[in-house]
Image 1 (tube, one colour):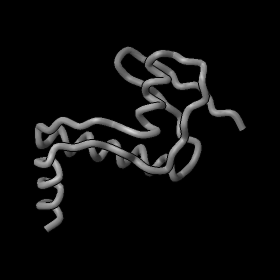
Image 2 (cartoon, one colour):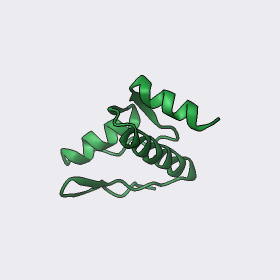
Image 3 (cartoon, rainbow, N blue to C red):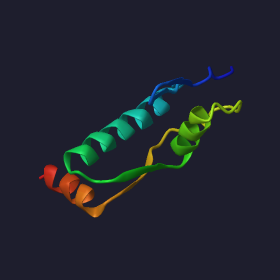
Image 4 (cartoon, rainbow, N blue to C red):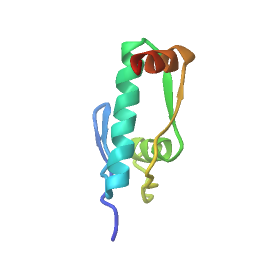
Length: 87
């Protein structure tokens, strides 16, 4: 089964998810984005999602690198906010 191409829309990317594990990974990235915004923290998407965004942004004719996890780099204050919100 081939993966549909990612679609570039202005400053947004639509990257299709082909499995439930990917759905969970994309939801985790959305959670990280919300947490980082709420704590005014910087973050970086790394790993397979970074490769997928890079491929989509540059409209490269390559298959998307599918993944079931979400790898990010966060500032410590973002992690502290996450830890304190769980208590």
